[in-house]
Amino acid sequence: MADFMPVGGPVLPEDVVDREAFMDDVVARLLDRHSVVLSAPRRLGKSSVAYEVLRRLREQENCHTAAVDVSTVSTVQDLAERLIATCIADLEPGARAFQTARRSLGRLLRMPEVRARMFDLELSVGLGPGEQPSPEALLAEALALPERIAERNGRPFVLLFDEFQTTEAIGGAQLLAQLRGAFQLQRHTAFLFLGSQAGTMAQLFGSSAEAFYRFATMLDLPPVPDEAWRTYIHRKFSGRGIPIDDGAIDVILGVTGGHPYDTMQVAYEAYLLARRSRRVDARLVGAACVEAEMHLRQVFEAELDALGSKSRVLLGRVADSTSLYAGERSSGTVDRALTKLVRQGVLRHLSHGHYEFVEPMLARHLAAAGR
Ligand SMILES: Nc1ncnc2c1ncn2[C@@H]1O[C@H](COP(=O)(O)OP(=O)(O)OP(=O)(O)O)[C@@H](O)[C@H]1O
Ligand SMILES: [Mg+2]
View 1 (cartoon, rainbow, N blue to C red):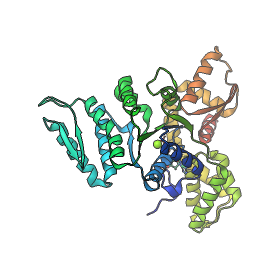
View 2: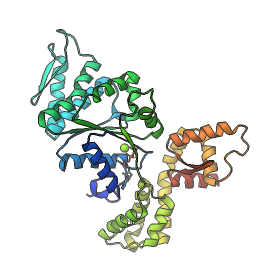
View 3: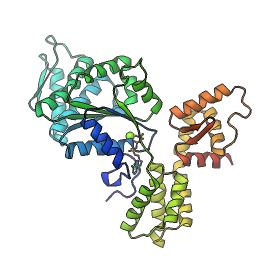
View 4: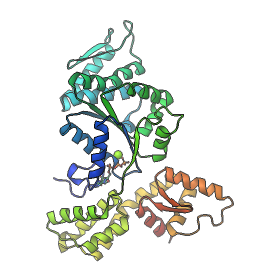
């Protein structure tokens, strides 16, 4: 079994379309110990880029790397345990290292003297006999670990936090302050923060009231150029013995706007339909779009439900290019709702009163649903 036009989570290095210059830039920054924030709406490829950046840092630049997906962490204690386990696993890759780390951590938490050795690193939490370490004390130990590993081995450490905007829900402003306090003292560790709520990430790293104010450089994930998609789709289809002409690829890109997930999805449906005819033309791509729209319908409806009925009406107007303010008593209310949709990563602001969809297929869905 091999990945073909993958849709879902982060893709393998050979399926990361374009992004070469961007990844090069992120690697260079992290090597110079400039931490980076990468925020972009859902499904545009943050994790694919970030995990490939980590792979390059590990394999080509001799860095230690570790990653935590904060959206799957429930408590401060859990965050500490995950951090320790992922850092230790990097010292000796493989499931066994992870289990060793977990076991040692279990000992650390049970032992009255609260000391544990993992490989040749000693973790210790200063406690009286019989006391359990507080989650914060354990986290302090976990946060110091990458730096200690980096210093001991003379190799920089790069730590990735995926879905970082969910940190606040775990431990509030106090947790953010503890993280910042620990990170800013480190001299051999750089951080890569990902977030799918650009508005929240901008607030976290850009507001002077926040602990992470200007802690890292904020980068935008650029769009994948059409030319890169053409080259990739040609290569994948010809690898399976199915020619696809440029006109057909242009129809795909016209419908998806080059949105990474949707482009993969439509191209894959085109491949499935072309298995018998062994050729892809614009007509077949039209049918592939209909298939992809059917698969995306439920996802879009769930997303629209979560946004609420007022947002849906407004988005319908953007999709139909009708007046955004028609029949509204207050233009301020409409403007605030639009700003929120931009923050939520649904719309992009172009110019005064003009917006476009981050995901053009959502606009098509709304326009079709309105008919
Ligand atoms: N550069 C890319 N090349 C090809 N496909 C991509 C690329 N980026 C994203 N994709 C497509 O989008 C899907 C989601 O990618 P990824 O998980 O990296 O995005 P994300 O921004 O981290 O999403 P989320 O916000 O849901 O975590 C991939 O499975 C793939 O189909
Ligand atoms: Mg992701």
